[in-house]
Length: 174
Image (cartoon, rainbow, N blue to C red; front, side, top):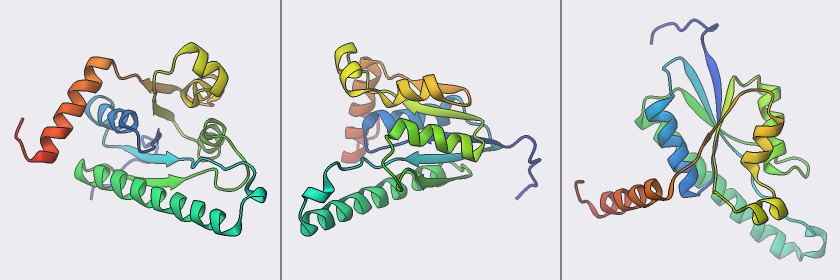
């Protein structure tokens, strides 16, 4: 492998989960923004569970098992996608310690890791739902220590992506 000039290496954080929007953001990044000298870090912050002290030990164990299975699936999926595309990168689960919301965990990790920029998808929540629940991408945009690229998937693109994926899974060649 050729020696890379480390001064040109950019650390890119790409926020992932199991949503179609995260996969679309990954594909958009690869097709439109990736450069060979970039080091891609796909990051995921698992959801935290409130009131675990009120749950039975069996239920807590189930939740931990589910969370670990989800992390394994995400890691396998995105490490495979990086390998298929010849991308130098890794998968990181972040925010596992403490009670951090995903947006805060991503911003903190970006700062600690000296990320050059962050790429995230968006689910296109309405104004009311975003106000009540909060938006991870909105939090990142407003608190990030570095530039943020938000990949917003238009409804037409979402339908075409889903149809292409359905054909690919069935073995059709479209």
